[in-house]
Length: 126
Image (cartoon, rainbow, N blue to C red; front, side, top):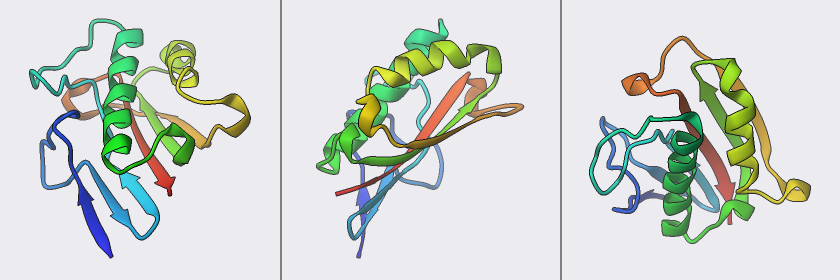
């Protein structure tokens, strides 16, 4: 059965979608960007802080669903400039145990919502 997951500890959706959907044991998150959930403002000063905020937003959604990063099976990372890959990867890696890290793809795209530099979505399971 489909259950909508929303938390005030992550940014409210800016369109016709929810932060995540839990279907049975599977959680599908929407892509998160560097929107501060308290202010609703973008924080894109540098790629390290931007990626950290994206990961913290995802962490809040996972917690709301009763999960942690250990439950994540797959991530999708969309970046506007592949030159930022190393910095993004360094922050991303700090949230996972390398031995049990999820499957992942990283794709450079022409543009992202609100012209941010990174957007990440996840699939997790209880």
